[in-house]
Image 1: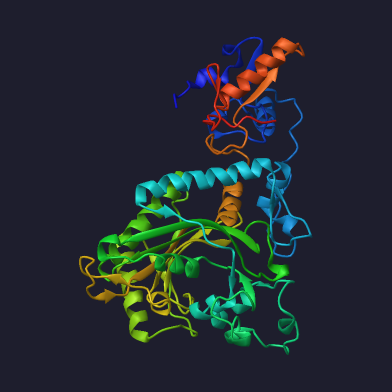
Image 2: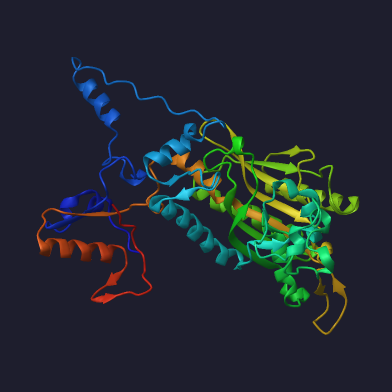
Length: 451
């Protein structure tokens, strides 16, 4: 896209005199590029007071809202989001944000940005179901280790005998197998997925793989559900329904170090774009309810430690806070109130590949020895909602131009029919809907134009 000169954009007079396309002159969606044109009223008042000693001093700015987990409306990012019409929360679905058009545009920009990185780092995007039979969660170990954080789903069309089960039958480790049903059958209990790893393991098994196919990198922007205590729900940082830029790297043991190093590099690249270079590394080690054998955990923890040491950054240990299937590197960011949040994560997993009996042909594909791959779970943003909350507080309504939900506004200066038609055409050209005399069916968006 051709870069416009600052003077061209900042000065509305350089546009057609009949219809001016300008950056909106408001504080709501300004950008750092136009700070000189989009002035702070308090700054203007202060400047006036400095010139005129006899003038009345401007009133102090209102105090910023403080963060609390008891009232979602008192978080700073929620207050800003409410003022700028980004999202809303409604009692019909607690902990599930309703994104308004402006908030949805920012949300989609984050996804578009990360998708661009996927092509650079060799990821393939996939789509998997939202609801699974509990037989899958039993196989993966989630029923035993994660059940309290999962939402159950049942069908009103289940057979009558399922409704007549005694309390507790067909649940827990026996879910999905009541009445002699086959694994993954139509009956039994279901759950909303809290994570994508079991589904991606199933996807890996759809086709056979050789050593030459690895590493295989599956990525998915999926809505996930985890049962947060209602009193803990806080704006976008603690929600029940969230989207995770989830990915799973299926690789050979000799590829572990390279893949983790590449993932840490990707995190650093992405975070630097948003000016978030002050993140911290935390190594979360084996929890009490760990799955698998001790030797695998020791190898996994050693591999993560080696990569952290090679990164050259400081890191700390969080004893016993690893996932039940493997240790992890957590990336910690601090919000404007000084509260820490986990965002990105890199987890090394020797257990799920064994649980799902994943394998690859270690020869040339002619039926040689079968080996078990390793899974690296990774998320760059982590929860997109939480990451967006941190950005809302960081930018304080001054979004970078490429993320701004309203980059251009076309303002007709009269109500003449010809002028209105020209304004609409100008808007469509700027938005990439029209090119020359042709209307582009797929659209090539250039600017976000809105009210």
